[in-house]
Amino acid sequence: MNYKIVRLNTGLRTSKTSSVLIIYTGGTLGMAYDDSGSLVPFNFGQILEKIPILSNMNIAITVISFPEPIDSSNVSMSHWKDMAYIVYENYDSYDGFVVLHGTDTMAYSASMMSYMLQGLNKPVIFTGAQLPISAMRSDARENLMTSLEIATAKINGKPIVPEVCIFFNHMLLRGNRSKKVQSVHFDAFESENFPPLAEAGIVIDYNTAAIRPYQPQEELVYINKLDNRVMVLKLFPGITADIMDACFAIKGLRGVVLETYGSGNSPSEGWFMESLAKAVKKGLIILNVSQCNGGRVIQGRYETSKELLNVGVISGTDMTTEAAVTKLIFLLGQHQSTEEVKKKLVVPMAGEMTA
Image (cartoon, rainbow, N blue to C red):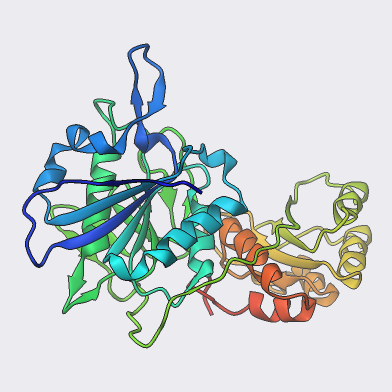
């Protein structure tokens, strides 16, 4: 891929200058209005004109842009591989990384990056905007400026936030614990099952107890084998055996994220459990997550979920759907053994679930 590289001429450079690599994939943050009033990607070489205060930051900034900015609704496995590889390839050259990404699938991409970049010990901050950077009331400036500050924040020479995160509307959230919940408000993301890693006010207040500790012995490993033969099946009152059986019969399907009610509950009728049992018996991996934004799956807590255990459905505990889907894609890419995937699904890989 022919990336576009721009090195910004920011001021106040000293021998102690921090360095950040911005990866621009697309999304609203990098858009501007042209003469006709249409939104088009702007040239990041001109970003200092949009955000002049960047010139006063003691940060050396390089921007790598995808050749063609993508709408995040079109994000695919190849884009995940590109994002992770750019971080891996440039890992030793920068203090931190900021990924500019559309909001619609940001939680999916942040989750996948947390799995693909094993041994990560530097900040990778995803951010974006609800309004383009050229709009008068845009949230783009604040989100970008604070993300850059977090990406370079250190204590005793060690990064404060050595993990994949999402920063949006004053809140820093663990990437694989996040979910987009708003399309028209600035507070677009929530992390109901895990506390915020930081809150940006007059100062940035870091929640050090929640942040994954810096691990100096770790070395970064880039893993890009993925298998997207998965699907999400959301339960609803009125779902039928024909619908479920048709889904489970999809050619090549290896894994299903089953969105159940409340704390992992489902219909208890015989046909429902029989459909699941047949699917598991033929080798499908079925991972149970809750439709609720908060809470966790506790299979067996209620009678309606006890049978799920018996037929071999795996509990996703408090994982989001986004984290569950990407974890399944990642693990299926690493292992042909169904049993090996099942074992690793229930073990935290990057803080995506409570042990």
